[in-house]
View 1 (tube, rainbow, N blue to C red):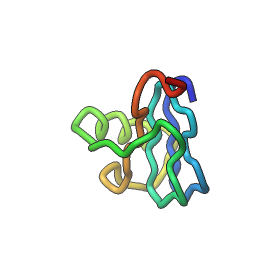
View 2: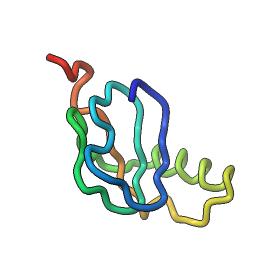
View 3: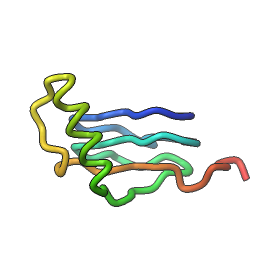
Length: 79
């Protein structure tokens, strides 16, 4: 993943976000494992607002605080 946002309302498989460079994954369910260069990060107010906006825009019945945030560990996953 090199940028943007992904919203996963259910569960995900192995190596979610493998070799992620930029962007954010919002995961409501569980994943079997995180990919290389990814980590969980804390949802902050800005994330909750953005996620609520996306959920409303696409008529997804979920609450933003039910999600986990996944981001890149570093900007250089190959180093």
